Every structure is written in structure tokens, then in C-alpha cells.
Image 1 (tube, helix red, strand yellow):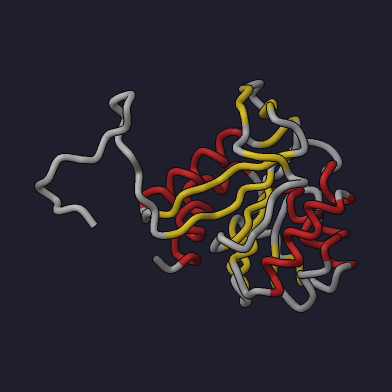
Image 2 (cartoon, rainbow, N blue to C red):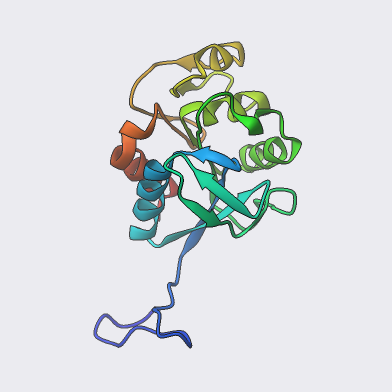
Length: 188
């Protein structure tokens, strides 16, 4: 690790090279993901030297606020092996990844390895469909019935930190609290 007084390492474009102690895989739908809470989550993780890698079914996604950006990889090619956990982004309407086999595979693998499992809003429905919520306290907008059917106790709180490394947020209003809970959960 670099000395605090030393100059930061720069890339060929003059940008500071970030060194992360760990990384979290962020799974995004192709359209409608909550831009603001995604920024809070990534910023909070970055503050504790945890990086993020984004994946989605398509290379370019459109957020709820119409922001477009390119993801780091495709959902089909993703693996959670090198990550501290997985974060499933919520979106508007029915979550399109709740029936996506690649998304469900990633969540199940992360849960099986005891890694962080996180979601906000209706991203909770992806965790429910993956079968990883039984016996857990969770929250998430638009996924109450699905969570209860999966054997979880739905609380409706802004942020719910459950056992087995789960962190869920009701919706985008949880913002910084959700980000802080994620940062605490990865334990760096």
C-alpha cells in the first residue's frame, strides 16, 4: 500500500489508479435501474476500498433517470468467484432479472459461498426467486409478497441487515444508509 505522503499512481491518461482490497459484483437490468442509489452504494463501497464491477444482459444500460452507461461485462459471462459479494439493482415495474437464469445462478453461488447478498427495491424479487431468503428479515419495495412466499420475514424498514451477509433496502430513499450498510457488511 502506498505511503500517505507519496504521489498517487497514475495511468497513461493521468487518472489516479484505484487499488481495491475487494470487489462487489453489481447486477443491473438493461433498463430502469435506480441511478441515485447505485451511486450511493458504489461511492460508499469505494470509500472503504471496495470496488465494483457492473454486469447486465446488454452492454449499454439506461437508468431510471435516463442516464446511459456501458457496463463492465455481460451477465452471461459473469462469475462471483473473485468478488466479496453481489448487489442486485432494483428497477421500476416487474424485475426482468427475476426469471433470468444467469442472475439466479450468480445469486445462488454467492449465497452458497457465504458472500454478501444485497438488493434494493424490487431487486429483492431476484433474491427470492434464487431461493436464498428463507428465514431472513428483508425489505424491498414491490417485492413483499414474493419475499414472504420465499420464506422471508418482510419488515418494510428502510434498510434491513440480515444474518448470512444480507443487506436489503426498501427503495432509493435509503441511499446513504444502504451504502453504509454495504460498506460495513464487506468488513474491510
